[in-house]
Image (cartoon, rainbow, N blue to C red; front, side, top):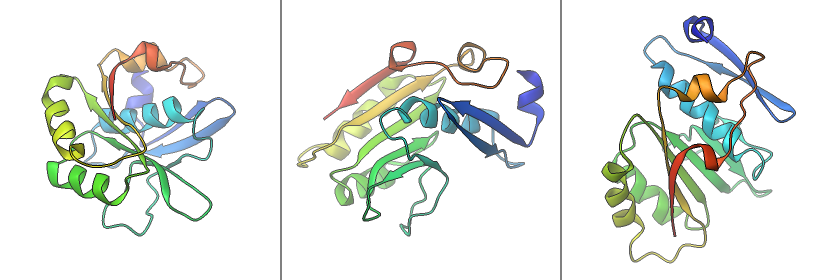
Length: 160
């Protein structure tokens, strides 16, 4: 696993797909891992997930799935996400399933922010908040760089 974390490009696999994750010099390994974990975790539900693809919004999602008309149906964010960004996204994309992944952080810190952002909104899709720990890379990535885990393996909460 250490050799992976030292590289600039990581090829990771889930199911029958693979993605090359590029680690920029200023980016923490944990941020790249969370993007990969979001991609792998939601891939069964959204088989056309993409990583770091601009959709013409002022915000660029870390992980995204779109419908045939190009509207986001899933939007994943890894790491730091501000209150203003959450509010802006959930108000504009009320039919989009959102997920925020945190690294080594208590879900109690972000849950009030998310609940406040979605309060009083009629939404048709859930908002998931997930927590990954330092052991996640060792637990979820095998020697062939396949990601193996489900929601049952992580700490997470769903808000409607």
